[in-house]
Length: 290
Ligand code: SAM
Image 1 (cartoon, rainbow, N blue to C red):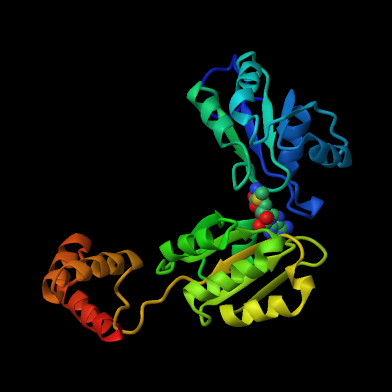
Image 2: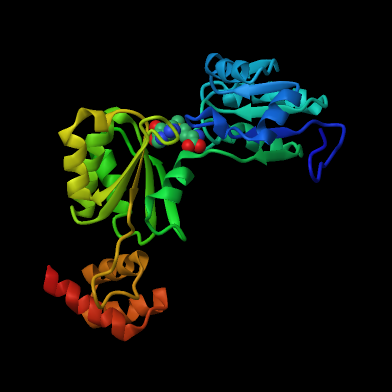
């Protein structure tokens, strides 16, 4: 197979291939073509992927490439690529490298001057965002939050004034705790969407303010089952603060702790480029709120 822009035609190509996140019909014609034609498929879990390949009648050999062997075994795949074999990288579901193994391999392969070609397809965060009805022009993906409440809340504190839509992956057994912490840090009024079992029989997209969403999930253990993505609307500045981003406010708050209000507003204006008068007004409002 000839990759676009191949650096050296004597070497193979690494294809990063997205696979379904539930509905097998979501595999692309191109993904099937690549998986059939490469010499080797590097898979996160070979036992899992063999079922996918059998379903599509693909007999390409598989080799394990998971988070525990990716760094050490990368050389093996690199050697095959250098010998001229094409290799496909897949994960258990969705797009490799997105909260899945593959980053170290891709980095290593690119560093060796070998072409890496994406074969795009399903990805839970993009599927969720495309149907959630939250602003989708700018968003941040935070992957999985820390498993323990202290770490989770600390991470959420860092993004609580983020104005872009926030997207998190979460395991079903932690979804309730996660929503409790989201409510505690972001407030119960903030709009959120729980996208679970995407592309599967029990697909659900539930959009409610965080307090109501937490109550909805708590009320029925079925709502806590299956794979899920949590999306939270970005922070909206209170009236009067509308021109300030979370970062500008963070700078202002830090300076307000260290110096008088007028000086803090002036310095924050220099650092952020926001109008001094606006920062001054916001600083007055914030001090009133304390
Ligand atoms: N690489 C995958 C992708 O492209 O989305 C993500 C892999 S990550 C290990 C697994 C997490 O993705 C799950 O815990 C869940 O948060 C999310 N996820 C995967 N499949 C999903 C689905 N069908 N519905 C909702 N969330 C899903």
